[in-house]
Length: 349
Image (cartoon, rainbow, N blue to C red):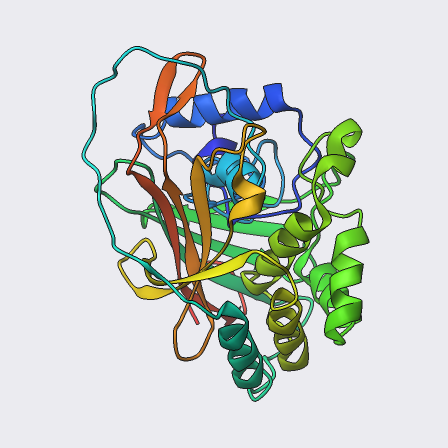
């Protein structure tokens, strides 16, 4: 299980419904292991490269992201705060990286332009069941200067997955049934995307009511505001490795334009320093007392509006059980470098 935390794939939203205690434990463990030598995980989904590859998943599941992102991806990207924050004594500060961003006054105009650009894209290629989806991502943890490179090969039918961390050895695994895993194979995910409505109003209503990918415990699932859930799920669609059909990508942007409170900042950087537009939903990031403790961005190319990565800005010190895990001014970021279709694991597109 420790290995699972070493390679978590991309900000997955499809994590099973975790409890707050479980997320705290996973997050604390992944932070303790941040600088430990990489080991091949038994693999579950790297959820966030969620910010990076090791904070997101847990068991032997299909990875989908970076490890350290599991909790951040589930909590920060989802707009759900599960951390225990209490008054703490002064703690040693770590180096921070300040990036100046500028909010755009009319985010709806930008989103409608993004829709117009997206619907003119060429449809992506469809892999055969025996082919593999390749993905390469970079992750940066709070306060770290080094970047982690993660590579994933996932068979389209979902039966096998291979991972490689920082250009190390290839780890190939067979993915067996897991009753606690609500993840989808790439083939199943492609079918899900194809079935989504392309009318913006219908798409918005669908994602608000879709029971898949709930990030809160069952008893708390109804407490996530519909607009917060819609923003979270729609931006997760934009970051998936499966090619999103052009008409659906356009509908996603038009649906986002209908959500009150969506903001777009210019000058937001991904894990490798590429500057793009950052989509954020501050109402979904606020604690019960109204404080905004972090801002989670989906970073898009400013011209093509394609997905670049994610970035979580820590606006306050983050403590878990008395330990400082992320200092104010630090950030977590991912960057999508390469995706493609190949015939076998280890092969590059």
